[in-house]
Each structure stands twice: as structure tokens, then as C-alpha cells.
Image (cartoon, rainbow, N blue to C red; front, side, top):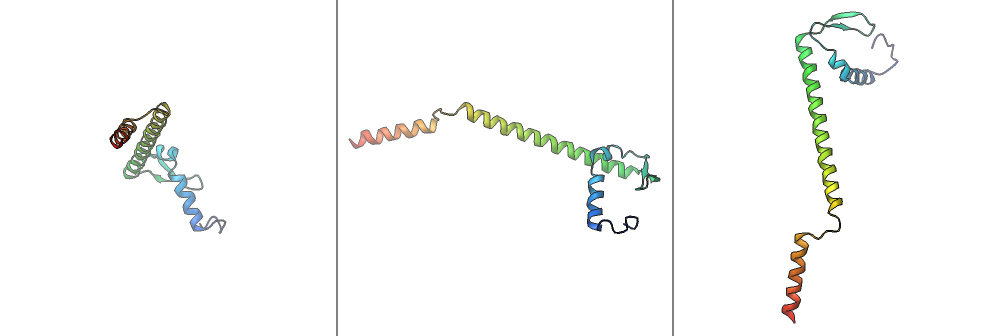
Length: 109
């Protein structure tokens, strides 16, 4: 924040860093022993085993979430397609209701 001379608020800085550090490419590059680069582009230490494991875990969670979303979309698409194929068909419940209505009319007569 000191180098930015108040150009952005601390909240904006935190949001920008959160966005950058959650980027998939950034997480893929977090490999144990790789150099950590500061905002000036200079080496500022190395990535620890714990940081690398955290990045790997976050990537795995993202991939799992993506797969779940894709599966949910596929299921929803299949439901919509099945409903479209069955549009205009009479269901078993509809047939039963019609039969009961006929019996009621026949019994009343």
C-alpha cells in the first residue's frame, strides 16, 4: 500500500491480490522451491511445500467444482430434452384419472 501512495483503498488492494492469487495460472505455478516474486518483479523468497500443497488443493477443488457443474448442466439438459420428447404424451397418472372419471360417470348413471 505504501508504494501505491493511496491510489487505491486497502479494500481494493485486498480484492485485487485475492483475484490474482486465486487465478488458475498462478496456482499452477506455485511449485515447491520456485522463486516467489514481489510486486516489483524481484525475487522475494521461495515457495514452501505448504504453499505448494495449498495451491494444489485449491486447483483440485476448482476442478471438482467444475466437473460437478458440468454434470449438473448435463442432467438438466437431459431433463429438458426428455420433457420435450414426452410433450403431448399422456402419463399413467392421467390415464388413471380418466378411468376413475369414467367409472364415476358410469356409476352415477
